[in-house]
Amino acid sequence: MPVGAIVALVLLGIIVLAVLITLLSKIKIVNQTDKFVVERLGKYLATWDTGVHFLVPFVDRVSKRVSMKEQIYDFPPQPVITKDNVTMQIDTVVFFNVTDPKLFTYGVENPIAGIEALSATTLRNIIGDLDLDQTLTSRDIINTKMRQILDEATDPWGIKVTRVEVKNILPPKDIQAAMEKQMRAEREKREKILIAEGEKTSAVTIAEGNKEAAILNAEAEKEAAIKRAEAQAEAILKVKKAEADGELMVRKAEAEAIKLINEANPSSAVLTIRSYETLAKVADGKATKLIVPTDIAKVTSLAGALTETVEGMKAPAAVKTEEPKKVENKPAITKKDFAKSEAELHKELLLDHKEGKH
Image (cartoon, rainbow, N blue to C red; front, side):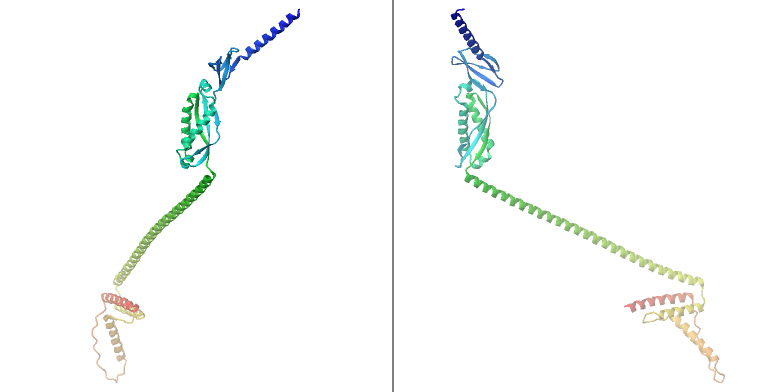
């Protein structure tokens, strides 16, 4: 084979290989989370979705590969000035995703730099309307306003701002020191207030407990006094009842004794002897005065007269006999007289006994 033919074959093989490599390189596979912006001869042609696509060699090209995932950018702290002229550093975190790859590619030269600039200017405008205390306590308000403003501003860029968060708020060191002192003073104030309220509550509780205890003690003393009074009244009633029962028993015994005496029908001698015995018992008492019934005195005089008569009969005959004294007929002591004398004697003895005590 001539040398020229060999060279021609080699050149043809190289050309075929180059064409195959070029064709293979123009086959593009688009992933699930990506989209390709394709240009033809420098002009926007189409946006490729997920799948296999082929570029025309030397005519078409992929202008931009856009990720459809939500993206997060943490921007560095930005110096801002509050309404009360306090300079502080605030850094933000922006969450966004691309909704239109074509606008994202052709709407702005550098979308991330544009979002950062918008975030800084928007933050300065919002913080400029707030003082220091409001800035420190209004994170949610700042986040909401920034998200709304950034979302509206980035719509022409095919970007959807889903969330904005204020990450750090760094006031100056002297402000931080003053805030720490204020916070410490506020905590000490709350501590003292809580201690005072606790002491007040404790004192009120103790006073209420003492009040309730005093009321209960008073009620207990009242109940005890009532019970004591009732017990004393009941004791007095029982004593009076016992005395009345005793007096009744004595009266019944006296009546029974009189009844038995009347039923026995004693003789005059027995009654006389019983009268003497009773008189002897009365004389043994502590009474300073003794009253003798008239009937007993009559009996005594009768006994004396009888004694004199017997002695006169025993005297010698030479002695002139004197006429005997006439003895008056003494009435006999009846059961009724004896009972009456005994009752009067008992009554007099009781009176003398009481006078002797006094």
